[in-house]
Length: 101
Image (cartoon, rainbow, N blue to C red; front, top):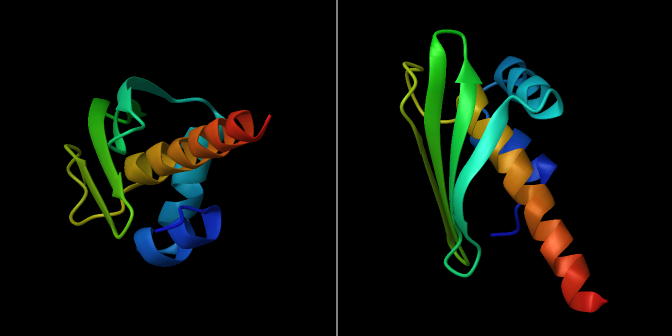
């Protein structure tokens, strides 16, 4: 899986509204990556929510992407997950760029 903003919008976000809410969280820096292991594709985030912080987990493998969030959103692809995935996308681009330099 190649993680991109377009992939996140089309395959993870359940609606444009949720995508844009996650994008706002990302742009506002309303999250913290508290644990990551790029070698295994595992990332854990604390993301600001309306009723407190939520833990969002991302597992990115070559042929699979799994996510989870402990917020009360009914289903996958909540705004917290979108914000975390947008950050993972940027981290991966940065590490890829470092590898080319």
